[in-house]
Amino acid sequence: MKKILLILLLIVFILGAFGAASYFISSNKKSTETFETETPFRTSIVRKTVAAGTVIPEDEVEIKPQISGIIEKIHVEEGEKIKTGDLIASIKVVPNEQSLNSARNRIKNSQIVLNNAKIAYDRNKSLFDKGIISSQEFERAELSYDQAKQEVRNAQSDLQIIKKGSVGGSSANTNVRATVSGTILVIPVKEGDQVIESNNFNAGTSIATIADLSKMIFEGKVDEAEVGKLKPDSELKVSLGAIEDKEFDAQLTFVAPKGVEESGAVQFKIRADVALDDDYFIRAGYSANASIELEKKEDVLVIDEGLLRFDSRNEDKPYVEVKTGEQKFKKQFIEVGISDGKNIEILSGLEEKDEIKVWNKKAKKIDDEDNNDKENGDEDNTDEDEIND
Image 1: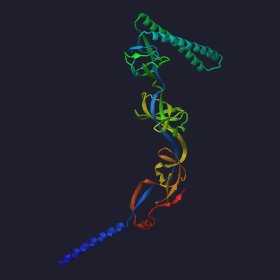
Image 2: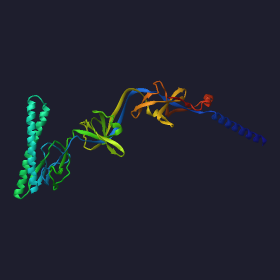
Image 3: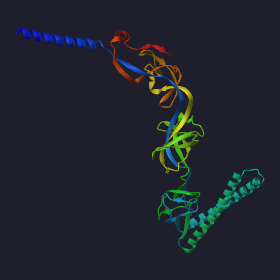
Image 4: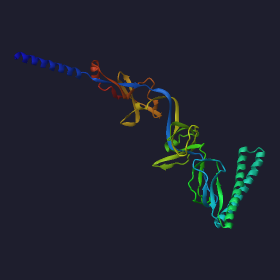
């Protein structure tokens, strides 16, 4: 019995000794974190901003009647392509004295415009024949003259229609035709609706809106902090919400001279011509974002922006940790320039040979008994008092 008890005590002693030894060994091992490093490098860097907006036709034309009446028939549909002169709608003219007077006044006004256009045409023709003005200037004068003559003919025709209805005591019909070629975007009226003529006293009823969808522009807004860096003819990259993984080239054509305050910030309207791709059909009103280049620098020293740290006592001054020895780093304040959102320009404080501590990458943890004495003497590898400014 004593022999068995002695054996049990011996076993307990051996197990206890083994456990104590294991604890002693593990307690003398220290887990060491090894940080990776990155070095500055040279590259081109571009600072950009993004403007939200829409893609719209460069020109939209509202078609309005020159005579008041009731829409008898609409001859086109939304989305239909038409040419100048195509029939859009027929209007039943309701005879009344006011319409008759308005038509007569329209003839008088159009005749005045025609007379002025003829004077300008004759003058420009003489100058063109003498080689004083360009062919473009003469062609503009000629076009204005032709349009004025057509307006007089239209006014006289409308007067005859109204007279016919007034004298006969019944209604007469007139046709509304397209004044430009393009695509019918909107027809805001329907057959049976009453429409009002367009004149100097009222805008009139819009029967249809026509636009050339082969000429589209981006229209958006930029913040006042960035508008001063925009340059005429700047290149833009326009992406559309309706078309994935595709960017359209665009060129800045307009920056508003006056800003508008929105939600406490001043915004400036911009416009840019969009270069279309025949493989894609762009509809008017698509939401869009335009990436605009504000500043570009070639062959500059940069680092990954994620390497930057900020001192709690001076948050406006960034720093990095530069390697000074094996897993030893010092705080180095730096001066930075422009950023592209990933890399940031280094103006001073770093050289290409410097190795910078990567805070968000821990390569590995190792157990190193041989480094116990070294680590006990240097518990914090980053010397907060060692600063290069």
